[in-house]
Length: 240
Image (cartoon, rainbow, N blue to C red; front, side):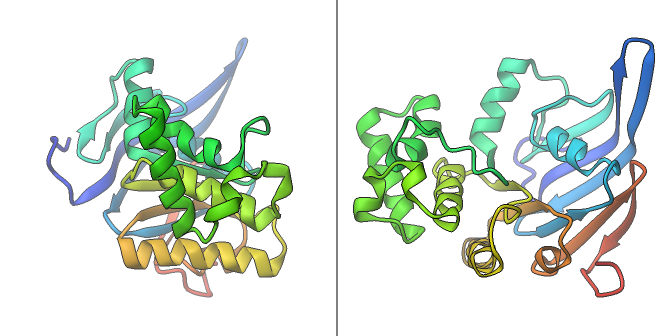
């Protein structure tokens, strides 16, 4: 596996297996997944319901643990880390964006964005400054920071979620159906933000989606079926 300092690949997964157990019933989901995601890649992960794409996203995001195989994240083997060590690695190396935004309703926008920094031990003053800067970069500076999430449009909430995901400057952004709750125009605006982050900052992005137009915005398409990768290449019309 990669050693620390091997920065060519942000994700190196080898032989990932995953099954779920419910009493005596075992349901296999992933079978020997091998996947490299290089720095600066923009990958769309697609597949029918039950194909394993959400399970794979959870493994890559250190939200779940594989039954077998190895996983190196940003040059560090994270396979055998404890739950607390995985949490540290997750906060340091991964930003998450979800379909439902997952903003905390009791906190204003600035506080939501600053939260990952506070978890990382950054002082409240510095966290708020960095959160304000990130919101400015997302086009939500000034008075937006004092608003509550329910005072924003869906597109604005998703841009806040992206700001929160990136405030720790992680090398990897994982987005799970990021436009699923948005209308077409607003979805295009969010996809423009992701494309800009990938193009101008070299941010590595993995997007789980069932929408061909979302996948087409990426540089690479990985398609799953029955827990195995059946296509890995350019997002051509034939494979979307």
